[in-house]
Amino acid sequence: MAAAEVARQGEGCRTVPLSGHVGFDSLPDQLVNKSVNHGFCFNILCVGETGLGKSTLMDTLFNTKFEGDPASHSQPGVQLKSSTYDLQESNVNLKLTIVSTVGFGDQINKEDSYKPIVEFIDAQFEAYLQEELKIKRVLHNYHDTRIHACLYFIAPTGHSLKSLDLVTMKKLDSKVNIIPIIAKSDAISKSELTKFKIKITSELVSNGVQIYQFPTDDESVAEINGTMNAHLPFAVIGSTEELKIGNKMMKARQYPWGTVQVENEAHCDFVKLREMLIRVNMEDLREQTHTRHYELYRRCKLEEMGFKDTDPDSKPFSLQETYEAKRNEFLGELQKKEEAMRQMFVQRVKEKEAELKEAEKELHEKFDRLKKLHQDEKKKLEDHKLLKEIRKGKIRVSCRAFPFAPEVNAPHIQLTRSHAILPVSSPLLIAPLLRSPVCSK
Image (tube, rainbow, N blue to C red):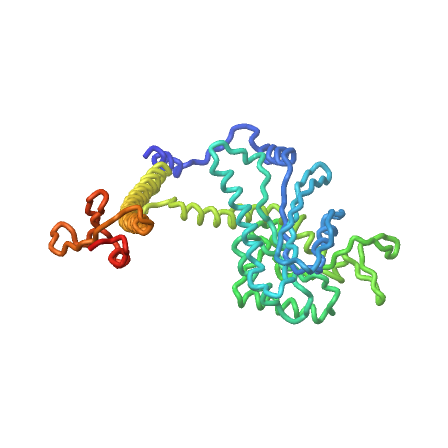
C-alpha cells in the first residue's frame, strides 16, 4: 500500500526552475569517467563453416594477431572455443571475448549442429541470472560473458542460403544479435554479389529470421545506420598482410590478376562492418543483449519457477507472497512424495515378508522330507546290518509272521538269543531271512 501511494504521488511531479547553477550537469562526465576507469567488455560469437576466414577477419577487425591454431575438418561434432583478450586503445580498456564454432558444418548429419551454440548462449545467460539472484552480488566486478554480437559467416556460393544457415539463424535470432556477412566475397563477381545479397535478404524475410537492425531512433546516428541497414549482409574480406599500394602500406590480398584492398569500400564492405560493429553501435549491441535477449531468457526462467508480475485478478504480485506460495506448493508436493514413498516402502516390506514366509515354509517342507528320508535310510541300514550278522551266524532267529498283530504292519523276527521281537522295515530282507538256514520257522 505504501509503495502504491508513493507511486501515485510521483505521477504528479512538477517542473521547477533553478535560480542558479547546481552542478548535476556534470553527471554525464562522471559517468564517462567511471566507465573508463572500470573498462568495457564485448563478446563476439563467430558462426560459420570451417575455412571461411573467421579468425582472419577477427585479426583484421581489431588490427592485431590473436593466437589460435587452424581448425581441421575432421571434428566429430561442433565445439565452441572461447578466448578472452585485454585490449587498450588510448585510455580505454576493452576485455574482448571471441567465441568460435569449431567443426560447424563439417559433419555429414548437420541436423543438430545448432544445438551446442544455443546451449552455450543459454549457459551464459544462466550464469548471469544466477549471479543476479545471489543474496550478495558482485555484478560491478562480474565478468559478463553474454554474447553481444553474432557474426554469421555465409559461404560465397552466389546462389542461396544453405538449409543449415537458415535453421541455425532461426534458432539464434531470439537469443543474440545476428549480423550476417558474406565471407571471402572476392570469390564472386560484383554482379553475382549484388544478386546474392538480394537473394539472402529475401530468404531471411520469407523464413522469418530476425537479424540485428542498426538503431535509427538516435538522431546522431539515424542517417548512417539507416543507410547501412540497406547494405546488409556485408560482403567482407579479411587479411593481415600489408602490401605497398602507391605510397602507403595497406591491408590487401594479392592475386595473380590483381590486388584486393581490405579497407577499400569499392572492393568490399569491411569498413562498413567495422564502423557499424565497433565505432558506432557497440554500446547498442551490449544494451540490446541485456534489455531484449537476456530479459526474454530471464522472464521465461522466472515464469518456469512460478514468479509472475500479476495475479489472475491483474493485481501486483508480492515477491514474498510468491515465495510463500511456491514454498507451500513445494512442501505439499514433498509431503505427497514422502507419503507415496512410505506407502511404497510398506508395500515392499509386506511383499518381502510374504516371500520370506513362503521361503521359510518351503525350507520346513524340505527339512521334513530330508528328515523322513534320513529315518528311512537309517532303518534300511539297521536292517542290512542285522541281516549281515544273522548270515554270519552271530544271531539265531526264528521267523514268525504276526498277521493279526494290531500294533505292527510288518513281519517280525524273533531272536533266539535275546527272545526279542524286532520289526523288519524292508520287505527285501524278509525273503532272505525266510530262506536263511539260521532261521527256524
